[in-house]
Image (cartoon, rainbow, N blue to C red; front, side, top):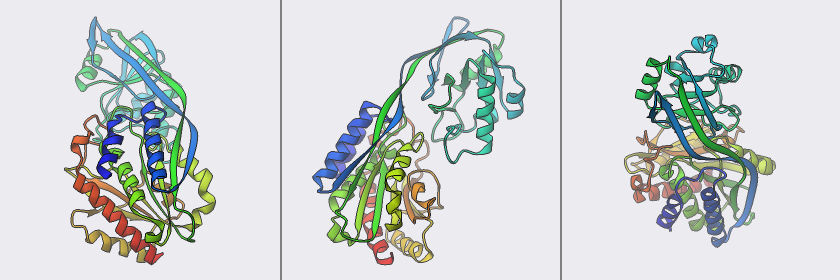
Length: 385
């Protein structure tokens, strides 16, 4: 069944929040949970979807390579190109109505979304400057981070934005006296999304949450991130009964993890009253890549529980213990003082959020390893809770 879940979810292709493929994934997850005999809750909420028709960038009559950034506004502008590589330059540049090319320190990593709760002061300052300057459009070469190359991906940032290859960025800078023409045909669309939450029938006082997100970035099939995690979640729901676990189990298929955690916000709004009953949350995000090692870490766990989790990890020689990391759905729990365990991988740089994250990179054995690891973790957590 695990293999069928993997092929079905990844076979849908990109599953960005609000898209038809995202809804198809939600429908499949709901049906699988119900077939496993679980009580299923749908948690709908409003979101923003995005579609694009085409992008065209030209200078001096030559068409140049460019890719529209997720949630970019549309534009059709012909204007000079002005550039900035540092915050000091951005503070001094006069780019209103011009095409602004960011590079260097300003393009070293993707900008956090305006509403992202982990946004730092640097990103906040850059965003404020961009909104004050109001360029006609933003361009930037790929960021230096391996996991995602576009500088912006924010439905709250009201600027057209695109990513260009380094060679195109250099050409634009070298020919700054010549106007460039940028046309982005795209649209933001009000849409609905939903988490799918499945529960055993509530006969115990203790609860363990097992979760994974099923949405993707706009441009990726999302095999390791996070089709594998979502498939493992479904397999666990089918394999573990409440009688075997000795604890109430909640299986949460989160939506909208990739851009803003509004799916997590909806989950908290509906369920925070029962959070004191949760003994631990186990999140799977980025597992199962063939050329990566599955990884494990614990956050906000009591010392005795963490030591027990480490002993479980030692039973799986292919699994690597790593330092805690704050991103993904486990933070919804750990930031509220609930012990959390996060499964991911080490060695899969360049896969997550990329077009290369296809089903061909996945390992059935590594996914089975992750499922077996979670089953053992549940046994140990129940004993220590």
